[in-house]
Length: 195
Image (tube, rainbow, N blue to C red; front, side):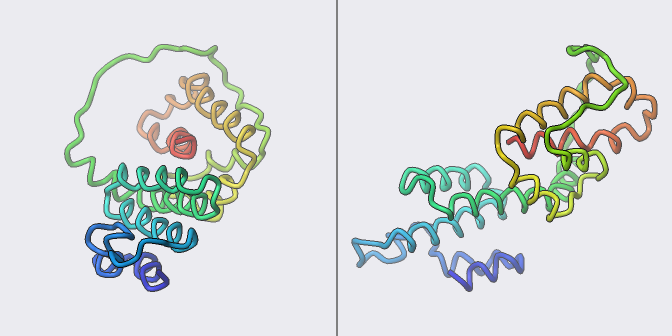
């Protein structure tokens, strides 16, 4: 498991299946064993989830996380894997977006003001949320981890305020149309963190 994690953090994903087994199932890797310690099980599937996410098998990664939750609700490896998946995705989102841009289709529509227009930024329960407005798509890992460690209920309320702010101050952000995408990255940060 340590070597697999080392390969993961070196982005050497091609070496991981040889350690985890081609089927990515613990009982297939050790067919002679009938009993596994919960620490073995959770550690193994944590790495499987990280690997699957890193090789763009994201849905399968979240399925593994759900299986971990079923096997041992609240186990620390579930939170560790979840936070690492978010960190990895945030760090690599720019490159993924560049790849998606190659096949992007544009949809034309119109903007509907669904919350009252404003020119005043919102007040957040957690002041650190204001940092989301300062970065392009590449958030510093330390900032993301600090935000992910906030109390969940107040974090969700603040992220909803961020999304509403994107609508309320739409006209304000749209003034510089050439840099609109750059000025509204905070919305994507909020959506990814909420997810």
